[in-house]
Length: 180
Length: 335
Image 1 (cartoon, rainbow over the protein chains, first blue to last red):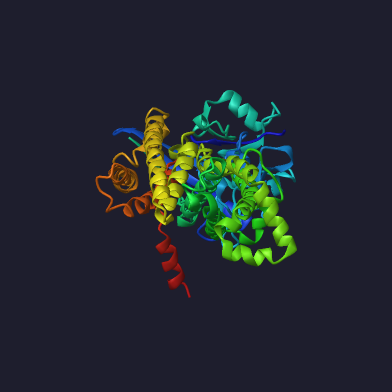
Image 2: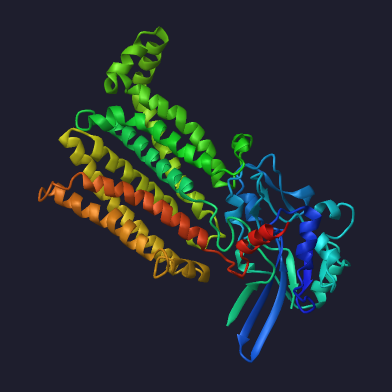
């Protein structure tokens, strides 16, 4: 299984939200709905405050509970990778996957009624391109690639930089990493 | 301090500001599914234990309610689906790790068993209608066959009915992403609650005094078991992970405290238990009709509260400044 990962540098991210716009444009995400979003996390006590910007989306987990709990097999892994997709023709809109996602990253695609989510732009990945959000990022803080290749940019970054994933305790083994 | 703020607009319907994907339709299904399980279990038990004389309604007529109640539940469940045309997809695959898939297939097995259960006591329970069936040779043969195997049908109904009742709880507990549901006690709790509501229904409908009394006793025992399971649920979450402890606060001071303790535990469990004790001991029978009604209300309240509080519990809680009204205003102002 090819494991794709996204590595986002929270030290260079300025929270501009271009990744969000790029996604909406590339994937024709309906108005009011979002497959990705930016979080501004502030921690500490004044005046020692620390702010971190995180561009978030589906984590394309290695242990995706949205796939294991889907009753019809509509939620599936694309081409033996960790990219989680939804087959609209198999989706009943039961919303089990929305409840199953600890990152609240899935949404109902209105008005059709099937479930929609980040696809890691698999239609671009197929052609060897980066996802739209990554290729748009003006600060170059987002990186995409395969973790199976030790020489890929993402593998090298994770080898050399301190990093984290969101809520590793979920056991879902998320594949969006944040450099800290 | 730790503040996590969404800086890009996110107003994903049903998810923001907190998850609310399932409403009364699913709570009603969980309630009616549990009730169906209880109905089938008691109809079967009265057959297996030869209680036709003592509990004629439960032994001969109760089974008819199972497919009716279940169909009503499946209707509300269908109403909840967002992609309704593709409902048949439940039956084009079996996903071993998905309790929902198990449930879909359990329902498929429940219907024929439940119909056979009805037919096995159709002549004794619904003589008038059975008369029409008996006019046809094939109808006679079917009724004869089901009557002959009445005991075996009842024995087969019990495990499948238990599976139906317990799955409605496991369905929720399997969601690790919702800390409030993440307790194995939910399966047995929903099963016992479903059986309790069914016992209450029999106590409400049955005419014969011996049957009313039998089912009042059964219901009381089930309420006691349910209280114990609720206590275990509370112990489980309050000694669990940080997320579980935090999720439990919604019924320990949070927004669901009042409905959980007053409506479910008080009105739905303790008050009917007290009324039933008074009834059994013969101290006061004037409130006998009230107890089963309260048990049914409590049964529904349990599902609705569990469903709502569970959805609100999450691993991620962001403050969002997104206001959908602003988007609407933009539409109005643009030419």
